[in-house]
Image (tube, rainbow, N blue to C red):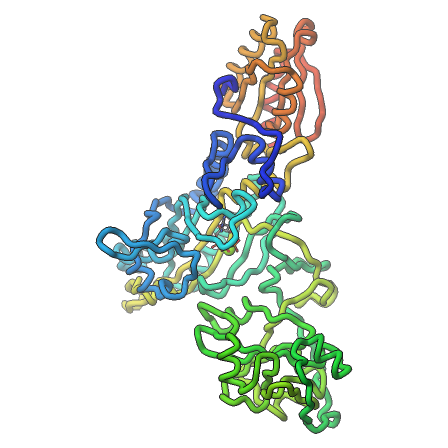
Length: 572
Ligand code: ATP
Ligand code: MG
């Protein structure tokens, strides 16, 4: 590409909303342009990198036997009604009507469409396994689009879906995809961690996220200082204590007047107790069924764990009216003893660690003391419902402690089971001649987010430092004096050589000063800069700058091509 005619404008200033480095640099390097909130034009430099990521994805998936398809962005509501997700998928699903008043949505993901596509072809186990993928624009009406391509509303995703005859075969596919993802992100030059993840509303019970470690990451990850346990904090397991208090310590339950003392801080201060001696009682609507969730007063409820435990589509807190209807008291005084309307009680294991707990009395302005689970109330479900925290013991090994990192989720793999195949009748004849639903998995990669994450990990004050494999151009040739015939001729010759040798090369033939070209080259982040100036060329030499190390080498014109080819091979 000759930059003199490139559709490229670099910028010194960044818009205020660009809070993270990747957004700032992509904007400044003339890669993206905002069209509307969370919706971007991809300009040539960005598209070249995105296409390279897509090529890596295609190559690695095809190695694992995946086949590419392309499904529509616009999806009919009927399919979403069949799977049941039309009713509970939140406002992220952009719904609309066509001229005939039929309901449609813009695809945020394609489980429904692919399940429909596959059921029309699937008859026998002999056809399986299938793993179908596409690379395509998704739309999610995100509540807070931000960070440029990292959290857009329209974004490019690779999504794949596997169909298998059995759980075991589905696990094999899961493993193949896990390996493919590892190769893909390695080839993109990223430092990442595969972590245990919650499955959320998509369903299923096994999942890993591929997290790129970066300060700007929106996800919290906990990993063990000793073993290789790592999980999204939504999923990280809290190691339970084994000691349960001695019953002889149990006191009589007492009702105490606690006027206006609602929060944990207020109640602990008022009663002179520690937060862990309180039972925090919250009413959640779990797929609309009210459940009283109990956790130690010192801990936070982990809604993702509740959703997973109950295999629920939607989990949210009950409003004040509902709380009053169930407890008979104002919000802030709920507890497990003497509910006005008995509902299911699910407790975190942590509430049994201490004897004689404090909880709301289901009576406005009153609390109970000396409360002991099982003696004073029945727990229907006991589980792990709180957030794990850094510094806590690792749930897997006995030696390590959990450490916290920030991560950018660039990909996720899920084992879905038969959630979609069952509700949508995607069945086949198995080895025993029985009609059974297909075992499914689904696998996503955010292509734009991967690009943004690569910049988060590879930049300096001057600009982007592209990993070779995903750089828009691998090399820039920079003639410094356009009036010097030798400079121009050598630049043109090198430019032509590189193109012929299959090197992605840009020629900065713009009529600009040297300083401008240097700044732009650093900002755009070409891995190799070839600087051609009158003085060096008079000696038959050129200067080569390696962006990643800032190393500058002088070499003969005749040696440059081979050096670049070798350097590329070494750094791919
Ligand atoms: P998040 O938790 O960040 O909202 P998600 O878990 O809902 O993402 P998935 O459904 O797992 O996302 O989608 C697969 C991949 O698509 C994600 O791993 C991520 O890389 C990418 N992705 C998801 N949402 C966005 C978005 N709003 N903008 C850009 N990429 C996204
Ligand atoms: Mg995800």
